[in-house]
Length: 88
Image (cartoon, rainbow, N blue to C red):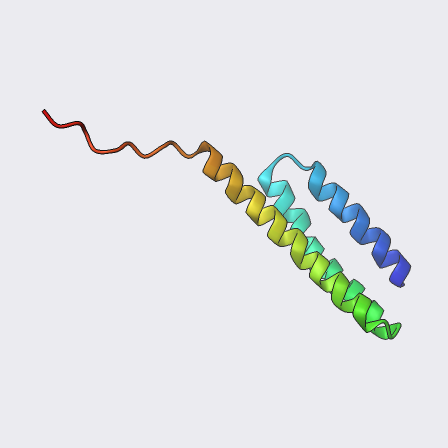
């Protein structure tokens, strides 16, 4: 089961990276959270606790990376705030 989850997580990471629309990314990322938790649980069952923690954090990192990338895109398109008008 652990190997299958590892393949699933790798595929999910590629799918998220290939999505162009934000809504599509969000949908895959919602699935990522559940898949990472299940993969982590499988690793606990296999008594590989360090890997269980790593897999769980990797799932969280995917979510965080996409959130930061979205924020960076918004910052780059935000218009500059004009300064005060010059005085007479």
